[in-house]
Amino acid sequence: MSASKFTLLCNSHKCRTKLSGFAWVTACSHVFCDQHGSEEFSRTPAICPACSSMLSGKLDVLRTELTPSEQYKAMVLIGLPPETVLEISHKALEFWTYQVNQERLLMEYNLSRTGGQVLQMEKFMVQQNQSKELELNALRGEIASLKKVLEEYKRKYSEVLERLNERNRQYQKLQGLLDSLRMHTLGTGEKDPISHPFSTGLIKQRSPHSSPSFLAPEGDRFFSLGPENAKTFFQFSTPTRDRTQSFIKKN
Image (cartoon, rainbow, N blue to C red):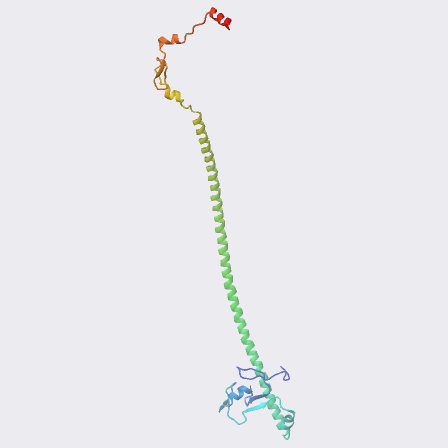
């Protein structure tokens, strides 16, 4: 890092702001912003907030202007011997070198700490990935087991459905047989002789040797034909020729 591009930062770890205008410098080569320097060095004895060094000397802490005027630059080292000027310049350059090295060390420390955090995060991520992979494998195994159970249920469902279809076919067959039996029973009932009212209510069965008897509307016998009257009842007298001819002639 070149000195021309380097910018002083407040050495207070709580501040770390870029310095401009006035700043507080210490004999232990630390620099602070005007606000924090005024707060810290107003107490006696003064203690460096960065390294906890005692700043009891009169010139151990100075408030300086970081961008002095041209007139100040022209007059501040005038009259001093070259050795003093070089020594002052050397002290000033040592201050800048220290600040640059401190910033570099701080950056390296932050980088190392960040790298350690990254490693921890990577390790954590690896552990999480392994854990999630185990959970995923367990879920895959559970899914495979559930698929087997589902296939078993499907097989049982197919068997039950086949049995149900067979029962339905048997039921339909039995229903058809029942309907056929009913139709046959109804047809047989219609073909049976129905007792006639005349024969059931008016004719009374007789013995084979007795002649049939007819009942009157009142229920009594109308007339009966016995063996002695049967012959005379069924005999018809044939009219004589003379009567027939006379009948024709008259007409």
